[in-house]
Length: 517
Image 1 (cartoon, rainbow, N blue to C red):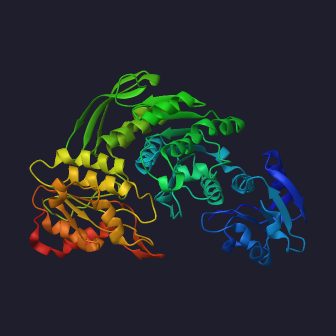
Image 2: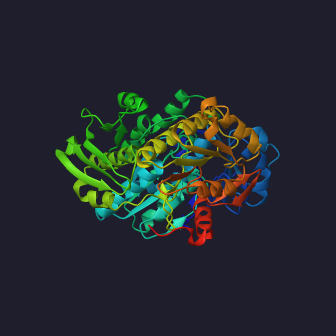
Image 3: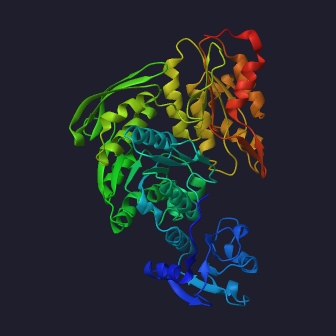
């Protein structure tokens, strides 16, 4: 992993003062800093430790531990927490520790977002696929590209690094950006979560472009309501253009104007924005869309570039993938790139792991793995699959995560039971909650007239096995909720579990039952 050279602490203090965050400094500011951290477990000689107040822990409680391990500086909001600290360590009081962490990280790693073209994608559903589409299109133009998001940090040469969150904390973002820049990467496309925006994780990033793809119910356990959720997302388009301009960049945006929150965002955007959607009033829109069982064809108009009737045939299904492709084309158009050269990339595009990922072991029915874990995400996937089943059945296996928004559970139960022929409700990362309590909340949304099609199997492996054993020729089996994840979180443990691998094991165990189609 990329490391920056040591930095004089004085230089970092000046950056805090310039950002208007500095309140006071005491101790030795003549020291050098070897790293910027917010996790006390990473403390070692010379680090600057930023005390972050989290939902479970307060970084101020670990000041003594970090000083004992050799920290050069402590950045804090509460001086009283450091009253017993003696010695030459610098104590730097700031107005906002989260903002300070981001500013210090950017400065420590030499403001690497200035060295690449940085594109952010935000929205509730489809961020990962859209990021991969944009990256594939840029690569087709001969650009060196890297990605950051739910699937980790990836380069166009196949390097992969795990990330703890969709959008990690500021030091890890800046470290990766520097690594990418030093390896010759020209474009970085990253998922930008609402948590990251509300917690200032991407502060210090100079974006060149951003896409808003949609906003539907999710993360209300954190944001509280949809208005707060929207305002967090909107920051990328109302505040970050200013940061881009300060870095000498022109910030441009692509916004889904079919989404009601997207239309609202267009009215408050602080930058040039291209709208996309299905109607002809948009800057980018399809003249027609034709859906097939394994692919989607469309003819697209791109007004800002004077392009009409651009034909694209993607090996993807679902209107949500039409929107994802329109977002990718709109970002390229906003950046002034040649979108006609990107058509081939979209026509060869393979979905990222766990995004309507087909599993084929020769069975005479479709099995798909998808990350859909929100009411709208589930609705969109089922809308895409339902017309494709013909005379077959649509069978779903899904659950809801523990310690997350409980209000979506009955909604997802209602959606699944309304749209599917067979519903198997199971467990999905219950965390510290009782899986049966979660399942009961899902079942509460199912109408009495639909209950005959619903089965309950808390054991996810058994639930998947049951769905596959029930499937017949022409049916579609959807395993939803976990997608790319390779674990189940039960209590505080991460137990290995990969939906795709489990499906393959079950299909293979059935031996000669299937003849390859």
